[in-house]
Amino acid sequence: MLIVYTKTGCPWCKDVLAFLREKKVAFEEREVRGNPTYFNELRAKSGQDKTPTLDLNGAILADTDKDAVDKFLIEKKVRAN
Image (cartoon, rainbow, N blue to C red; front, side):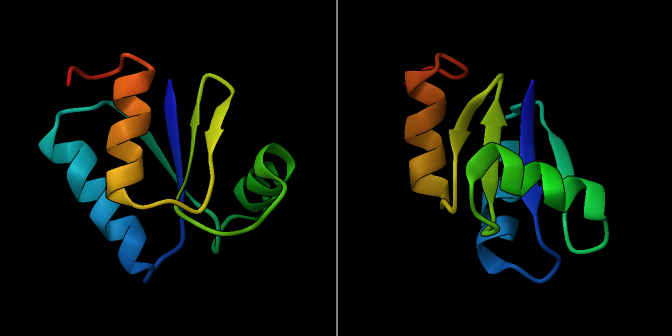
């Protein structure tokens, strides 16, 4: 399952979420500013606190943008090239 850690007001997060919806990629969004549990998860998994950060079954893509997300999802065979 794809988990996307986001922060409210983050423009890169908005771009990544819009991209995932456009490509019809299933994901769970976890907003970290309002949820200390999700924030701690983000830090434990990625070693940092920047967003957007993706967790795909333990494969972490931290502090990213939609172009890197696209490449990551293609490499992980979540979506076709």
